Image (cartoon, rainbow, N blue to C red; front, top):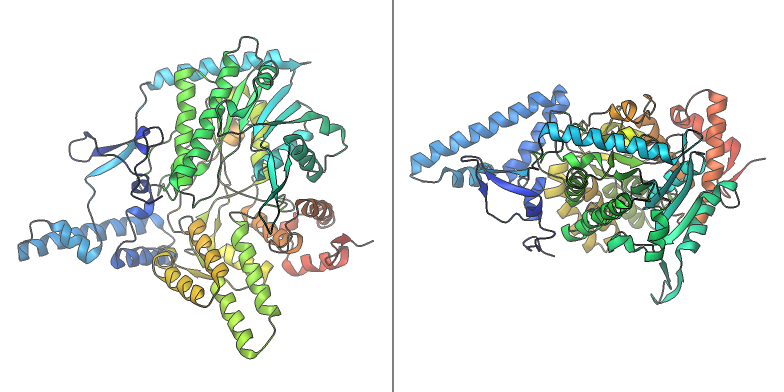
Length: 614
């Protein structure tokens, strides 16, 4: 789909957003196109603009003061506009903006975007939430056994990264007595012909999942039931007979299914993130409307990046406004729209909802286990690791070895400002929040960030990769890299018949090009402790990222080990070893130095067979 495509009203951004004149305050009738809501539609179209962002990044690095740098940029823009006005007057040009755009890449916006306002006053919202919280408390009391919550939950997205960790924690929580997991049948295709050779049923996929979660044959396995469904279908694609049974038993619905592809086009992101959310909300609303249902609340898993680019002021949990600096991608935009739909169901329809907003999710905090995930932060680490291995292990002539070494250096360019802070949160902390929300009916009506209070800088990521992966990563200014360097490099790589390396570099730029610029949003945290009762000791981002690198290197071979059963076998051995290292050192495995960690591996683990040494 081209960027100029207009979308039908039911998925158009105009359904949620309006364009407002800065001068008159009137709502403009212009149709809003999705691309107009992204950061880079308003930036990076002029060489002066590109270099201005580059210089601001250098200023932030030198001063450490983002606010001061931001104010300097605003002053430079005002100076550019005034200069254009003087030049326009001197040459008789009636439109100074033509001069400012041509010379400096500056254009004045005569409008701004905002989310359409709902009709409810602050007092009405507070009263509605208080009433819904009381209803949830009463419903939870009815569902309790011996004074303790007896939770029966339906989960969407159970085969995903976060969903798997949630199921693992459910298995070890006596107060959650049943988990019904929505799963689509899966086609198994012949790799050579593409022909479908087998279709796995939801029950078969569930058996695989329990085995890979080390739960097969355990008493906890009896908690789980796997049913056919699809979040993109009305009623979640659940059969009428199954819906009737669920209506009489479920206390909660957790909607965790989503697309996390940052480069998906708008319509695909909308279908996965908004349409799927609406189907889940309608499903939960039907349960709540059933007089015989023990339903307590709907838990929506969103993202802390629904706030988009939020420079200087923290993105607060209690509000969602259209970001002045727009969104990085359609994933963020459509997740924000999904959050608005969740709010609408609460305020207009009285649905009891809890919204949880994780930051960028990475592997488990103690061992880095990720159940086979290779996306988002894992992707660049695996790319760097494979590039480094190719350079070290290359054979052949001097020319061939030199070529491979050059390709490896190209692959190890990371588009990131050194001072940019990335908010990483471990998957176990997210799952802890999900489990806690099931037992906290008073959390209804709340939005909770599941984020870290120890953000990690790009330069720390670079240094940890050097320590743990053994490659030297070069940081490239993201704006300049995305608009100038990357197109040149990928063009050269394709001419050298290296399309896979070119594709990997493009994906890296797509995923991190926006999240690694200076001026990243700071997410307010506190509700995770105050409302959900989680520990104040949030995971240490640097330790967690170090364990991610170690796990990707030794357990997954930088993405080469793909079989989920084999990864499960390895992760169990790895988990036991990390727990043993914690016991013997008295601290987290992520705090052990690279040399000492490698020595411990050599002593306790045969990396060739990936078996514990006797």
